[in-house]
Length: 548
Image (cartoon, rainbow, N blue to C red; front, top):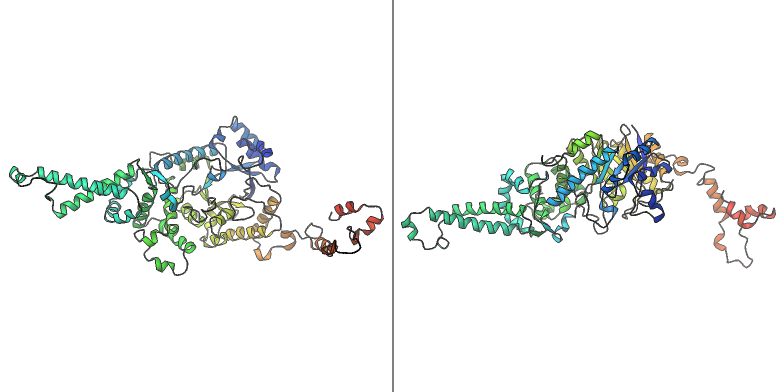
C-alpha cells in the first residue's frame, strides 16, 4: 500500500503529429510512463474501439512484465472527436440512460479484463439543467433505476397525487405535460358523463337532450374524473416520443420532490453542502422554504440539481433487474470505479449538474460499495468556479479514504490546460498544501492512492520530480509552513537555484540596464570572465559556460 506516482498517456486527438504514433493503440499508451521515471500510466481511452486492438491482451502482458501498471480514464467529451458525449450517467432521458448504462458496463468490463486498477470518468457529462429549455428532446423519461418514469410514479401514488394537486408548478416548467394533463382530464370527464348518462333510465334520459351540455356529474364526481384524467395524462407524457423542450426537467423536478418527501439520504447532505458554496450571507433567509414547491428555491438550480444528478448516477449501480449490474464487474475484477469533477468549457463554469467533490463524497459513502471512489482534480475544480482549498476544508473527517486518485499539475482555471508543474514553484507549494490537507482527512498511504499528472498533450518536464518530492514530504507529515527550504525549492549549495549561484548571476548582470547607453562600447563577458578572455577564451564561449 502506497502513494503511487504516475502520468497520463495523453490522447491521440490532442498531441502533435510526431507524437501520434506513440498513442495509436491502448497498449502503446500504457507504455508511455516507461521513459518518464514512473511505472504507472493513466491511459486516456478516447473510444471503446481501442479495446478491440489486435492482440491486446498479449500486448498488455508485455507491458506488465516491464513492471508497468495502469488505470483508465474512460471516455469523455473533453477528449473531443466532434461526437455526442458517450456516457451521461446523470441523464433522465431514456435513450441516454440505456445507451450510457450499456456502455458503462461494457467498458468497465473491458478495463477489468486487462487488469486496470481503476476506471475513472467524469461525474457529469449531460447538458446543464439550466440550459435544457433550449434542447429539443423526446419526452420518454426514466427514473434513476432506468425504469419508465410512469412506473416510478405508479409506485409512488403520493408523489403522483402531489403532482396533480400542484399542476400549476408543472406549468411553470413550460412543458407540454400540463397540456396532456388538461386534455386527458377533459376526456375523462366526458367519459364519466357518458357513463352516467348510459346508466340512467329511459325516462331520465328523455329529460336530457345532450349529456355534454347538461352537467350530469356532481362536483365531487367531476373532480375525481379530472384527477384521474390528469394522472393518465402524466403517464402518457413521460412515455411519449413527442418532442419537447428539455423534458428532463420534469423528471428532475418530480425526483427532487420524491427525495424531499422520502428524506432521501442524499438530499439533505448535498443540499447543506450546496448552501455553503452557493449562497451568500442572508440569501438562505430570503429564499425561505427549501422545497421545489418554492419557486425561489427551484430557480436556484445549483442548490438542488446536484442531489438529483447524484441519485441518477448512483442509480446505475442499483438498476432495475432488466439492466446488468456493474457492481458484479467491480467485484469480479477487483477494479475501482472513480468519479471526478467534469471539465467545464467557457460559459459552463458554474452550470454542470454535478461538479463538487464534496457532493461526490456523499455519493460514494451512500453507495456502500467498497470499489466506488472519487478523484480530486484542482484544475477541473477551479474551472467549475470552485475553490479547491474550500473543497478539502468542507470534506468531513475521514472523507479522504474515499479518494483514490488525485490529478496533479499546475492548477490553472483555464480549461483544458494540463500544464507541467515546475520544481520549486508556487504551483508545487499550492499542490503540496492540497495533498497535505487531504491527507489530514484520511488520504493516507494505508491503501494504494494514485497521484497522476494529467498531461493532455503537454510535456512532463519537472513535474514527476516535483510530485515525488510532494509524496516524500507528505509521508513525513511535514507541515506546509515547515517545508525544508533547500530540498523543496532546490536552493541547496551547488544546485541550479542555490543562493550562491543566483547571487553571483545577479552581481554579474547588475549593470546590464546600462547596455547600449555608454559612450565607450562595453564588454559583454563580465568581470569574472576577464581572465578567461585574456587566456584566449572567446567571449561567446565564456557566455555559454558562465552558468555551468
